[in-house]
Image (cartoon, rainbow, N blue to C red; front, side, top):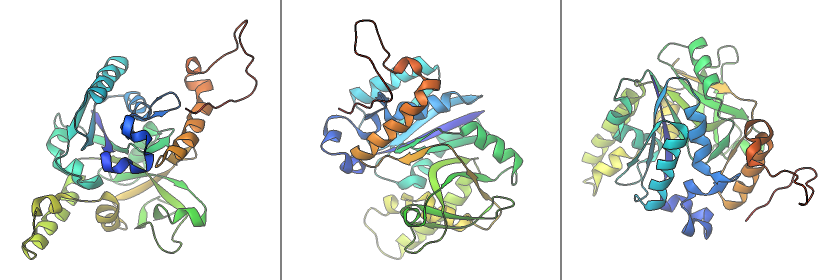
Length: 293
């Protein structure tokens, strides 16, 4: 059995989408004609033996999000639930806080996807890669290549070219490290919570020395990239699957236009019904046209 977790962030994470995010929460912002999250959910629902999709974030539950989840459950015939964080806990803290919900039912593995990425989502390929590479309890990062200058805006991965093991990981380095970058899509098994738990316990001990305010929140605020991947690199536990398919971040309304173009280019084969077509008496469509509202 498999599960998937989609990290949707919260209101303050959508500031670069303003003023558009005042009207629509960033995860529901339309990209290629459907809410951004729908691309993730559709990809997860296609994976064989996928039993549940969990959304983790700190948006207040609202009618728009509830309606989207209900419609998505009906369309994709899969359980989808939203788990609200009490505060921004980071990419690792959120899944650790809700670890009991994730491991309920004893999934053998689960995907973690950042909501603000556009991708072909090669999830089945990541599963096959995990079975062919590394130990049974290893973890997989989806990676792609970038040019030297752009790579420093992302998490950079140094790999063993023969085994694809991650030897070194640096988040947004100040100098060039590698042209392989982190796509924000991961394949984990429940063992990952032992590694996150180690960081949580260390954070708790550090808090005791500082007489903190809101120390529990600070202890639970954990970043997969800086706190977990950096430590796991070179330990024979972390591997990178490099995709040749399209990928992009969606950090602003402008980048959403680019992401729409990437998805629309795939619609000819994946969703031709979503594309406009020539009709008798209507305008003639020639080539590729992109309309942005």
